[in-house]
Amino acid sequence: MNLSTNLSLLEVTKSQTAVRHSIDNTPNAQQLENLKRVAENIFQPIREHFNTPIFISSGFRCEDLNTRIGGSRTSSHCKGEALDIDMDGRGTITNRQVFDYVRANLQFDQLIYEFGDDQNPGWVHISYKKTGNRNQVLKASKVNGRTTYTQM
Image 1 (cartoon, helix red, strand yellow):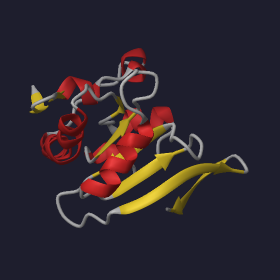
Image 2: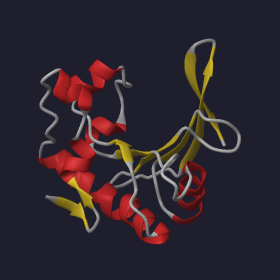
Image 3: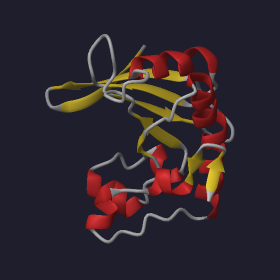
Image 4: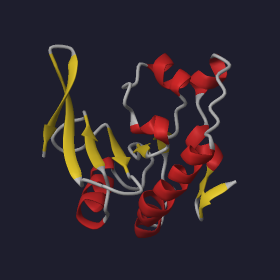
């Protein structure tokens, strides 16, 4: 099943952790609708702008999977409203290019520059909701072993 022209449901639900622990990472109807919205409003514009395959490092996570990997209890991934993109090492575009494009051109709820360094994030988290998108831009970093988020 395709969520958009260039994104399949399998790409956003596939998880080695889910397979390893026999977790059924299948979204319900509402989560599926949310995933389609993210695909159409976030993924597909990125894909078309850069004209290259886009790698999803984390997409949908059922609550069991999210708990298993230590995700936030309020993670947008569990609602089907978020994607993490990691393009580094693919020889095409960088995570920074994705981050900058989304920030300048798309509507989103949260755009997070995840770790990395000042030149390039380790990956890019992007969430999108049906209504009430905040266009909030954050940077994630470790402070005393804890993840903290600061406005950018």
